[in-house]
Image 1: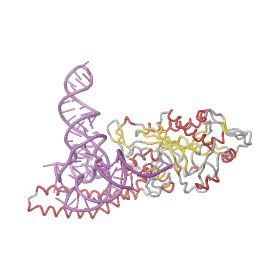
Image 2: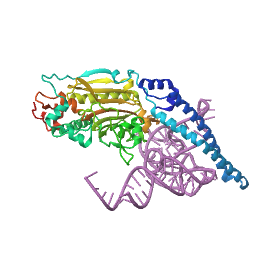
Image 3: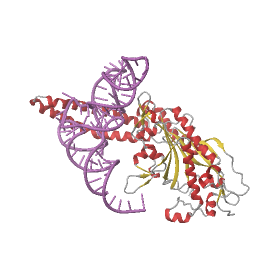
Image 4: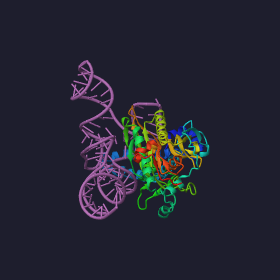
Length: 425
RNA sequence: GGAACGGUGCCCGAGUGGUUGAAGGGGCACGCCUGGAAAGCGUGUGUACGGGCAACCGUACCGAGAGUUCGAAUCUCUCCCGUUCCGCCA
């Protein structure tokens, strides 16, 4: 959400943002509703002022004047009731419109229509040089007896997965490693819910618009979040924080649920795109200062990169273009990790800076040095998402016999083992 | 799921249908005092929207929403949340 005053004064910039982000919203219409609402409010408030003044006279009035005053109050109340529906309608319309207004992209963001126009910033790490034909992760899992796609699909449908044996320990190891790693870099570990109220989804910006991505709980208003960003962003909703409490940073582990509506047919095989998974998410709530926030952006991006380096995985950093960055975002970089079987980099991390766009929705304010209440800035980035991260992990570290070499950083979480799996070919 | 009690400002807490945007305390800010500090004393200290160059004015807000009333933090209803107890249960 943007400040209404800002929209009024910067209508051109807002329209441009909507255009380059591909957000369908009529800013002129919004401003028209806003003007009409202001006029309505002025009329209503003038009448309320009159009603209040009149009501104050009643107890002091002489008995013979009292009836007339009360009658005048009744008339005013009646007139006010008449204006109420229009007022309410305008307020509701404006509110809905405001929730759809996109944030202004940072000046550095390339203009583009979709992910094909994202810009690669750099590549890091050494691509694996196999002297054998590498298997893809689906085959590796199957040969090792670590998966059972048919049976789990029978129970839980497509886009579900299960892991057996050592792959389970590997999944846990990666998550635990990420929590420890990020904790070591100053983020507070947090184990949090996936269930959240709809307001939390509005607060994070996933609603309105992303409703079809979210699983609902029958008979309950709670819904299943696709990322810990949703509940964590609402953790301090409506509070007035003090400057000393900032920044608030978390490495939040949670389950994540995504209906993946609209991605039919994409990545149906394997662990890339599943309905239910686990994720460690980096979240930062900091003061409303772009320079400070951008430092945090670099930091949580660096955290993810260091994590991948520790996992000895080659990756590239991509700057998302305007059309691929989401309405609320000011700046967004994806990290894509090398998948040998496909000979492509695939997204494993998504780093975002949202300015005060989420904080305005959530009511996340703090008192600045001057005692003024201001909306905070928020950022988030993936720490590690499992099982998706297992795809590059298994594929890049596979050996000729089908066993998996464990990167040194992960060994402490796997009882010191350097290799998992049995020779299977 | 049942029952009881609660939800007021940054925090704690008072609140009789009308001068209550809200007592009192704490905290915080500024000033006095002090060599400096503490203590003490004094003053100040809500948010949002609208109007105004400004001082300031108006409106709304005491969990949310409806209602009663000339007038609601205060009365009624519905809902939400919290705490405690009971029941049930992975």
